[in-house]
Every structure is written in structure tokens, then in C-alpha cells.
Image (tube, rainbow, N blue to C red; front, side, top):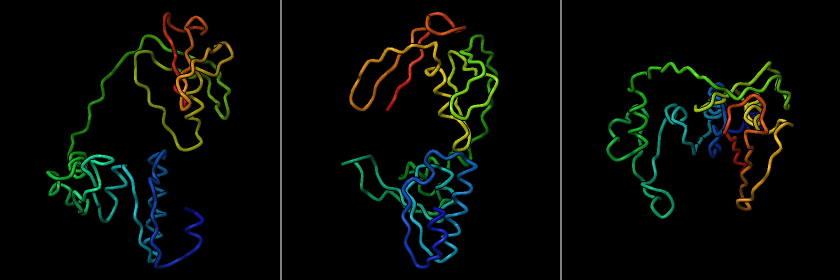
Length: 198
């Protein structure tokens, strides 16, 4: 994107395929500012993206469907994001955008976790933290900007030297590594950590 911005071209049609994929919300703000600069220079930008915030910032939305593959390819609706409600009956995208704009805030539930997988002083790649704790029986989201250590932190349970993996080939595209709980220190009994490598 920085190379494109440095060209200072006008009258160009840019097509961006899922530019927000894998980006933190803070990075999406910077990405959108760059896209706005392209438009301000006199260019046209078409974006293929599923991110609701990206769609909501657009000037115009074209929704295709109704399904994927042979079930798709039809124009369901085209509209400005502010008019999403008017197209909610024919466009799942419009309905989703409208519902998100009027949905009441979620009330956070207080959950007290009793048991954790804890790894002290992890030193994988660029991680510099006193400990990492992953609660058992919970859905944990690891967030942060690009390069902050997200992938490294979720690799911790399968990267410790005390965990000697055995591998089972599942296919040429993926493999599953299972680590019996007896190979982990200070973790709950009868728990396995599974990492799916794609």
C-alpha cells in the first residue's frame, strides 16, 4: 500500500482483495486512511472484504450471493451503508450491518476461572512477559497489532521443551499434534493441548 501511495497516480482503478485480513482495529484505521488518500488523489477503489467496519466506511456496497460457488454470482443488492435497512430483506449483508448498528451493548459476564495452563517467563521469538496464563474450559482471544507476539503466544503450549510431541499425519494439508497432560508441568490432569497446523 505504501508503494502505491508513493506513486501519486490519478485516474487509476485499484482492486484490493481483503486488505483488512489479519489486521488489528487500530491498523484498519491506518489502512482506511491510506485508502481515502487514494480516492482523494482522483482514483477509484474497489475492495473485496468481509469486515463490517470496512463495509460501513465505504461509499457504496455491492452484495453478491445468495450462496457460494454455483449458488452465488447473483447481484442481491447495491446500496450506501446508511441505507442498509432498506435492503435487509434481500441482503444478508445489509441485515448484518443494520443489526450491528442498532444492537444493544453486550453485558459482560463475570467468570471466575479455577485452573490455568501457566507458562512462566516465556522466551519465544519477541515475547517479553513474566508469564502467560490460558484458562481451561474457556474461549480465549489473543489480540494485538501485527508483530506483537500473538502467534508466538498461542504457540507457547506446544513449544516448551518439557512437552515432547508425538505427531499424527492427518493429510498433506494439515497435521494434528497432541501433547498428553503428563508431559506438562503444573497443568490440570487429563487435559490435552491440540494445535492444528494448516
